[in-house]
Image 1 (tube, rainbow, N blue to C red):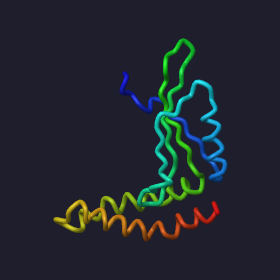
Image 2: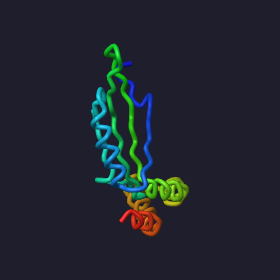
Image 3: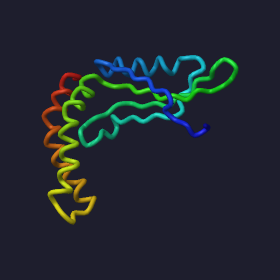
Image 4: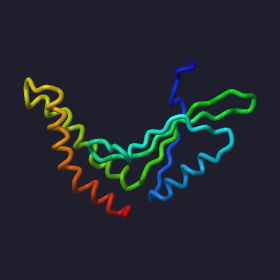
Length: 132
């Protein structure tokens, strides 16, 4: 049981980055809650441009037991775009290897990133424009 992670997951969906940041700052002030890991995907978005912040936190319960949970902080415009382009990502991911025989995984990944980048360029940039 000491290796279990993400048994409970909480998600926050924010309309602006300021609201997301403010919620993160509030989380840091909760008594008994210790943030033990942070994955800031805004520093390295995925090939679709998706980014969020994932936290692993330890909460000390009355009696001293510790509960580990995941807290996800999402920006609504980016999450909405991700949901819309995901079908294209899956199609590209599964189609390219079947169309191009004997291609290395590295080359396949580069082709996928290029194709997805072309899809992303209009949809994600439109979502990001709403944040500025």
